[in-house]
Picture 1: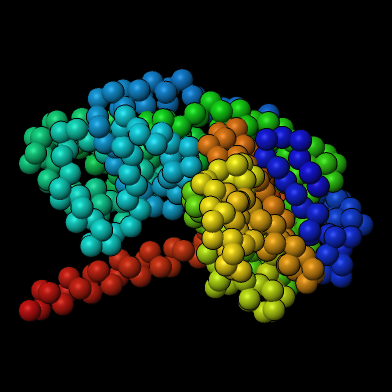
Picture 2: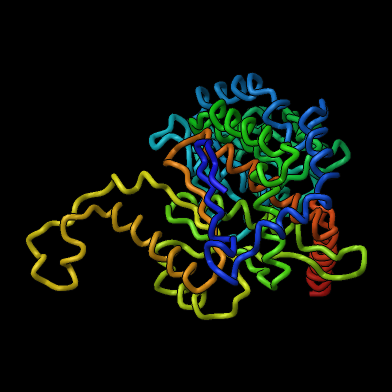
Length: 440
């Protein structure tokens, strides 16, 4: 199914008419239409709803307020540091790394882990020229609180308590959360996190504020996202890109292809995979109403690097995978040309005279064709480098596909009940450490 938008969507290699018995049929897709009509109507209501929903964020997000705040930060500071984890950082980092200025006025950096060997970098930050943004929807995220509380003394030592607070900004939803309470105690300004799960919040202030500070064209992102959102409420699922592709992935999962391999043929598009893995895993890995463990496992293969590591498995290993290629067709015209003077060497002759970009595109085509000849399902999503509009389209497409697959699996894509156990155990283990230290 080809798209007429700036995001090219080629799903032909999911179908039997392209890859033979390994593919699904158009009739199978059409047969799912009755199961999805309720979700179509729901999506149409989401788009019209005045309350924030992931699908209507391109319509309801206050871009003027984000730009105003972003301009103040960019003009007042040389650096911006983001503390957050999961949905509080992955979406914003994706936008910054793919679309941000190559020589930004303000350098934006994300810290999304509590690895002490990485966080030691924060000991050397000049906080007088640095803005700190702390993001947690719940306000109780242990890792984010720990990041903030361990740098706060250094900030206060460098700047004084009052000025340190002026260099901080908190984004949270929960007014009963610890982060909001800290903001009140320390005099830190709070921006409200929308009432949307973190992994669906990239097109809100959560992702767009860091992006704007880094020079991202957030108007272009949102314009593309709006266009895709309108396409994703089309009643005919064969004309609806998210419903079509979501249903196709569900049908392949019914054939035990439950591993979703995303293979970007562009280094910066790896940040799409980082964001998508949380979206896909946390939304779809659930127990359904019948007590069955459901879900599709997202994983990454990096083109062309993993042609030399994972491709053998993809071609001749278990037929339990569906590959999504992310590509930049503009690469064909990029890169230096390989000189002709060594073409007498057999291994160099096919390369001579071609650009590195031509080699890159040829390798993608070869990988895609080889998979298809073996009946291994794959699709290709293509967007040009630094195309904000197309990236906005891609974000909404992948979010809505996730919701479609969840609907067909009979699960709620918007909760994550199982992760609470790990959070509780972490606190218990910390208490054990404190108890042991008191005995020494």
